[in-house]
Amino acid sequence: MSRNQDICSVLVVLTLLGAALPVAAQKVGSSVSGAPSLFQGSVPTGHPTGTLLSLSLKEALDRALKYNLGVIESDQNTRAAHALRLSRLNALLPNLSVRLSSTLEQINLKALGFKNFSFPGVSFPTIVGPFGVADSRAYLSQQIFNWSDIKSWKSASESETASRYSYQNDRDLVALTTGSAYLLVISDGASVDTIRAQVKTAETLHQRAVDQNKAGVVASIDVLRARVELQTQQQRLIAAENQLAIDKLALARVIGLPNGQEFQLTDSVPYTPLADITLDQALKQAYATRADFRSAQAQVRAAELARQAAAAENYPWLSTDGNYGVIGSPNFGSSHGTFTFAATLNVPIFQGTRVRANKLQADSVLQQRKAELADLDGKIDSQVRTAFFNLKSSSDLVAVAQSNSDLASQTLVQAQDRFSAGVADNLEVVQAQESVATANQSYIASLYAYNLAKISLAQAIGVAEQSTLQYLGAK
View 1 (tube, rainbow, N blue to C red):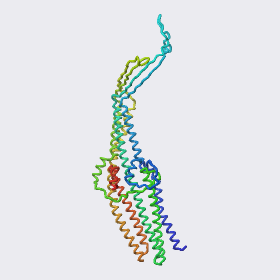
View 2: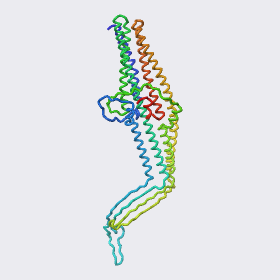
View 3: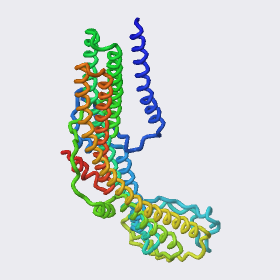
View 4: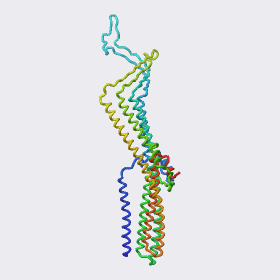
């Protein structure tokens, strides 16, 4: 092996190691970043078709809103809140039941203490029966007035309202998560296509350098540089294809595709400017439509009612109990109607510290809900403003990156011409290739950031589910 070949091998190994180490570090960092959220999981539904599935952004959103784990659990939380409201309402509703009974009985009077149950000249049997009793009766109980139960029911109603708003907000988060995952796969695909083109260019330049070296036009160092650049691009392609496969798996998990289902994206989502919307308009709309903000308001109202319910445990309450039926012996042939009606006024005098403890606990929850609402108020303002900043900066970055990509491509063409003419070695070509690669990746990243900023703005306003397709310009 010649000295030039030894140098070539060493440089190739060092280059590949230098490129691989940052990738490895990135993977290690992502593996310890923590457990995924509920919205990154789903309930896989269906069976793999065995064919390549075409998946549009709309289809991905529709599947996610059905099978995403976060939206499924949120829906079940809403059902649980509805069940709690029904439970609280039950205390205010009448309790009606019917009972039909038939009894056959024999009584030993001695066992009841009647040992000498007789009069002069008259004796009574100590065993009575057997005799039968038939009874058909309806029972009714009703809370006429209990202020604590009324407030508890109203509090549960507000909690159910808050849960429904929370469900709507979770659907917006699912739309944001799905849109982000879909855009990331688009970005990965664009990176793979770009790097493949760069590999082909590097292959052509490497072969040209080999041919010119054989002809004695260029030095061996030019072949070395071209080979290093080719293998660098090949290594980037391997990493990009692997990342694309991983991010496609993540998208499939978000939307609940069958395990092992192969798919391809049909929407490309190019750069499209967002329709004019001012910051003031966005803030006003966010406070009017954000489901999590309305949920927090409902939670405050529920906590206020719960505190009132706890205080009302010291109030008197009124209830009624009654029954009506027919009873006869030995059967209904000799029956007669009977009834009972009772009204009860219960006035609490002393209940220990139970009511005080309940009031203290309810007030503590109320103060927490008020603090959370105030925090969310500031959070919404911050999110909307941040989304606007990101939208503006990413839009500017797209324009700059596009211009930079064009300039880098022109530089590469000129460097190739200079190298072919023998004016310069291929160091300029390699540097120009790297500039093109960097510029293309910057454009892809800025386009992804711009589209993500648009759906982030939609989520910050509270219209992600309804407007994600519109904001991205997809059908």
